[in-house]
Image 1: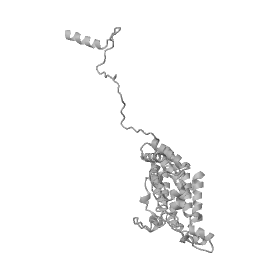
Image 2 (image 1 turned 135 degrees about the vertical axis):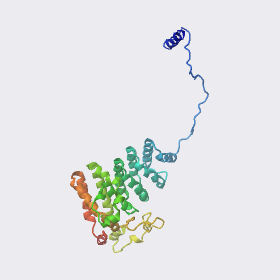
Image 3 (image 1 turned 90 degrees about the horizontal axis):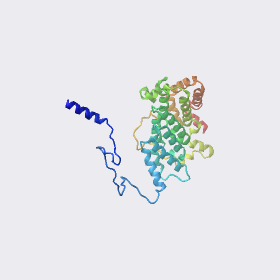
Length: 351
């Protein structure tokens, strides 16, 4: 009984409220930590004290280094700063050869606001600075165009539209600029399942084009996701096989009559004017058509997949509305500028 009564008293003691007497402090807890000490100095891990503000060049280099950050907010703010600097009266503090390679990987970032700010920065870059970096630009652009995310694909199409307006001839005449971008359009639209002949099999077998990206547009056949890519596809064809894609020598000969072929004796205006020789690159197959400098080569590459393209455009035209109008515009470009001889004889007649 004594042990039982003692245990009851101990349990009852836990639930009893302590009565405080006037003038007597509350007892401290067993885990109490004394924080009443004072320090004479505050020590920081990293501290930067400068009398003068950083120079604009240092700020530009700092924001350029932040583009590789994993934080989308920080990267977007750096892009906004770079846009303000580039769009100002003064030029960029650093060469574009060092800036553009850091901008290209951002085309596939998941943040929509970051990609929008990236497109704003692209629009203020001088056109002559973009033309020298088109081959590297196209490599990252094809990745964005065939992404699994529909938002990234849509932004990739918008960037391609801007690039065609800025350096369209340089794009279609660069290495893999015409052939591989054309393959991207065929895969994105899902036209790789269309009718194939021996020319289209040479262009690329169905296993290379049939992938998850080949079903992208089949999963979303609404006008918003299909009409705009069709418009940019027509813009791409117009730039590659249209009248404006003729060589500068043919145009200049019309203006310098009776002196013919004067442009061929001038200094080249392109940075990679001898890229077709492939002096320092890897070997490429002839059928791949990696470099299509003139309109005739581009027409011959396009004729390899012409049945697939026409079959897909005919299906899109049956939908009507905005999609049907865009498909009709692309068909008109094919009918007007794609002849059976690859455009060679037509160019000679025009000159």
